[in-house]
Image 1 (cartoon, helix red, strand yellow):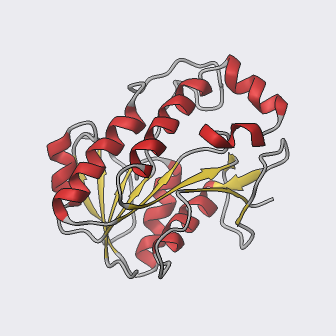
Image 2 (image 1 turned 180 degrees about the horizontal axis):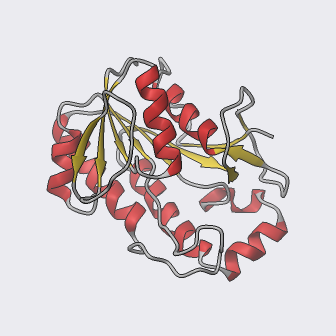
Length: 220
């Protein structure tokens, strides 16, 4: 599949900014939907729309005329580095935005969507380290994991050509050439946000439909 026009949701986040950067470099016509008042700096050539992803009509306008969708949306905490920090997003942000995106894609005949989930979500839970399971269970990360599991289900049952990426522990930093699909999430597993954004964009260029609806990815 060759997509030319691409809309990115969640482009104000770190992974989303990287995805926008790489998409422009790969020659895509990029549109992003960001919240009103956002002063995010994006590469030249990016079309910026303002609106809320929880509003179905806004999402429909954003998807109109596009060939593919990237979603980097997810629940945010007051302090991203503190797993026990309070949640500041709607607790169904990923699920409801996925429902809006799916409806918009079906309205406009768009078939391919790549989203960000997390390693350990849904059926990958048994494949993460016991220490990580303890941290997730006891903290507000569990709120995000429940929402991401519901998001994955929305995309999986949509009938669209969808892929939910499950990155391991996210780090800052440039991209590497080391991103790969893995089966386990170890304490030492890491991947940069740049690598996630790059992998998302490269996934769009696959010439056949996604063979499985999820992939756990790591760079270590």
